[in-house]
Structures are given as structure tokens and as C-alpha cells.
Length: 220
Ligand SMILES: [Zn+2]
Image (cartoon, rainbow, N blue to C red; front, side, top):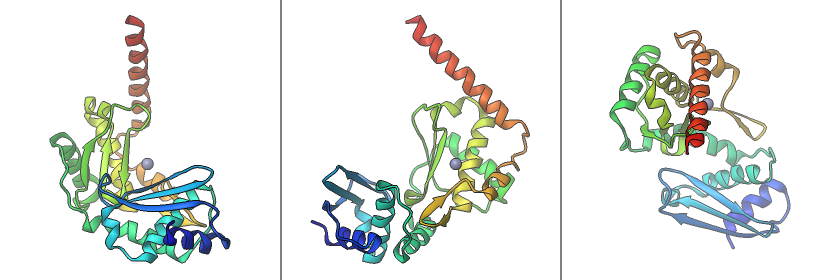
């Protein structure tokens, strides 16, 4: 049983936690990543080792944030607010060890063109060749991950890079226990990308890729 999880549950929902709880530190995570596995009896939290040295209040905020996700609730708490502030600043402490020449070239170009070169380079890595998840920014490891398929088109790669850098720059808004990433401000800034029909080009590129995928299967 984890006292921290039980007390985080109690202060969030105002009742005793009816689940078996565990909280373990794992070296399988990088940065400040964490997750929770759950069933109808159990809540198992796994936190990266870096969380070991972090205050119980912040850990409580992290656990409560995950509880809101598990139970699809939007309960607010001071500890969640603290955790969100922490998450927005933690990039400062993350070592930048991962990079790649193509991604770094794109990052530098976009950074110079749209951000006066003022954005500190995050970790940069290629993801799988996903057609649905083109890119992501992860706060807990300060990393931008880009789908491998974007390596085929420099302009579209720059666009996805621009989108992810905007996430790093604008962070997220938290309202009523929920985090909003694609805010109105975000969408407005996204339109500053200088190729005006870029969304159309991206859609066309993805359509072509999907069609090729189907054809490939057909040939087998
Ligand atoms: Zn996004």
C-alpha cells in the first residue's frame, strides 16, 4: 500500500481510496515520466527515479493529475497547480543528450525564422513511421519526437517541428483540473507558418502515403 497515493486520493475526492495502491520508482523511464496501471481493484503508479528526490507535495500533484485521467474527473487541487508549474519549468534541468542532424537542422532553421533563435534546443528524436502521430512534445523529458515519415519532405518536417516548438514555448493552460494544449493562442500562432496552404499540403502528403500503404499490401 502506498500512503502517498492513498492520501492524494483522499484529499482529491474527499473519501478513502478503495483500491490496492502501489508506488514504485523505475529506471525504465527517462526524465520525469510516470504512468499508472489500473484495474477494478488496483492502482499501480510507476515514477522515474528522478522523482525520488522531489517533494511529496509535487508527487501528490503528479498522482492526482494521473487520478483525474484514470477516473476522467477534473478535480482541482493546490498540489496539481504546483505540479503543472513544475512541469512547465522542468525543461531547464533536463540534459539534452539526444539529437539527430536532420532534426537539428530543421529545429535550427525554424528557431531562427520564427523564434529569433531564442528557444533552447530540446532533445530531438525520430519516432516510428506513424501516419497519425506526426510529432509530440514531452514536458517531462524536454523532447520533441517526430514521425519518421516526415524525413521525406523538408518543408512538412519544418511545419511539424514548428508545431512542436510552439508546444515547448507556449506550454499549456490549466483550467478546472484539465490541461489545454491547442488553445486559441496556439492555433493563431500556428498560422504564422509562412507556407499558407501548408495544412492542405500535409493532408495531400498523408493521403498519398496511406494510398501507397494499401497498394503495398495489395501487392503482397
Ligand atoms: Zn499539438
